[in-house]
Image 1 (tube, rainbow over the protein chains, first blue to last red):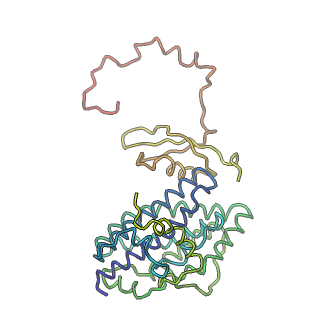
Image 2: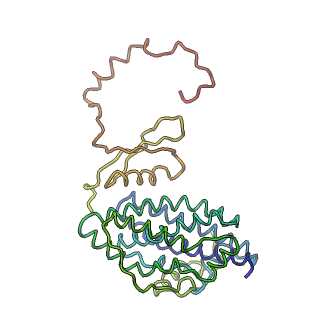
Length: 252
Length: 95
């Protein structure tokens, strides 16, 4: 793969994570526990959609085949999305959604931070903008993890359950595949082993604070990065794409 | 999670450096950190601020509307307290 093609593929994959998590958060709109939390969730979801738009647009430009953001978001098949299994997991209850966001963002914030220093100007510019958004998201959801974990017995038990269920999807974030290696070679991209160490430190710190127990070493699910998704993905995609599938090329 | 268990906080926003914080509104929150987050998400979405203060509404000591006359009316006819005899240079902003 040429360096340009590598950056395009990498930008697309970053865009996929942002789009799919953004879509999951949008599903929760109008279901917030409080008006203020509702606004925060909708803001965060739109931050993600904004990031996906920038990344897809950039990928389309690099690719040079005339594909725009909508082509990436709405006109691809399931196996073409290379997002992590973690971000497609269903919203579940409030603690599930908070924990999913926390586990992902504690990784994503370091990934973006590393990308701000990469040699590709397009990627580093997008990352510089996105990392500020995600730092705030992470602050917000970390506080919720502590509040729920160190809250009542019921909130503790339920969010511990969320952590235990989602843990198996965290390994995939750090298992480097060919594209991860290529982006490092092409433009001094992120080192996943360094990010994993930072992630583990941060996650351990917050979970300790939240009186939650770090799950034991276990089998880790993977496949999202190669386009093999869990059974939830098809439903998400069907809803997200229904308008473009019904009215191809529709625009505002 | 019942609404009356989440206290009300008053939100003050400073729109730019050099200006003072102004009351923007209020938010519900379970604790101080959440109040700050909620204030940020509710009142600074359109780039309104550079600094936020939140304070629990029940911690604010307010004047009693019944005492308005005693509190404020004596100041009404004392024009000599207004510094209206100075010229303010055009360059001075936000005064």
